[in-house]
Image (tube, protein in one colour):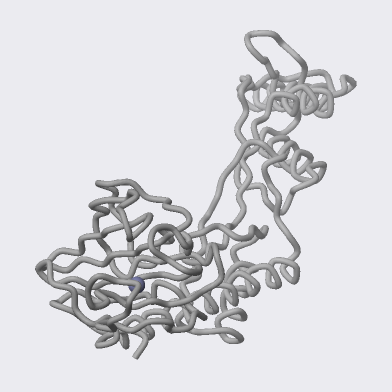
Length: 318
Ligand SMILES: [Zn+2]
């Protein structure tokens, strides 16, 4: 009796298995869209399709689906076909792909982007070996959902661009270093460095203390003859105390540098600064002219300590 029952159950089971197959009924947003045979295989297949049809597949970091399918185990007639492809197409439309790429920055300024971390690391290593181990090169991981934002270059192209930027920076650093060395060699008056010569390329036409029939007293400054319009640079950081026409001085710019030190620039054709203005050493504050008591284009430079004019050639143009 028991034997017959077991045989019966087994027979029914075999018939069932021959006729039906286990599948998953798939619903998207509550709507049935068809059947798939294996959940895992389907999801893997879907992911592969998205990846393989993507123009930037090497940049894909992750995929998320806005529409989450629901799966329900069910048995369907073996004659019925599952429709993985159609379901996959539907899900594909609504998938969000996150892309990843790598930015290479020189001293924190983004210069290039490449597709993979390996490429970025290789590039940094090569550029450092060729250019300078000390150079500040960093790799920044970037993410985007917008494929258009990925503007990565081939590693060889990226390398040329990064190397160019590095060279540029090394040249700039070298220049800055040389400029600092030049400034360090400039004289200091009352604790204030005269970092810049007011004019370059001129010729001394009258020295401090000279007596001439053109003046009522001994010369209080140094005259440097230069072409009309030659830029005049302020020697040091300071505050403009006046910039106006002042009798025999003509257009006169006075700058206070603190510690009782002032520099005066006279006979200018142009004045580019105003009283109260803060100026950095080396800033062009005016242009050489021949205003006031002057017989030709020249800069009359005065250096005053606590109001007393001193010989500029003790420090500059000596
Ligand atoms: Zn003079």
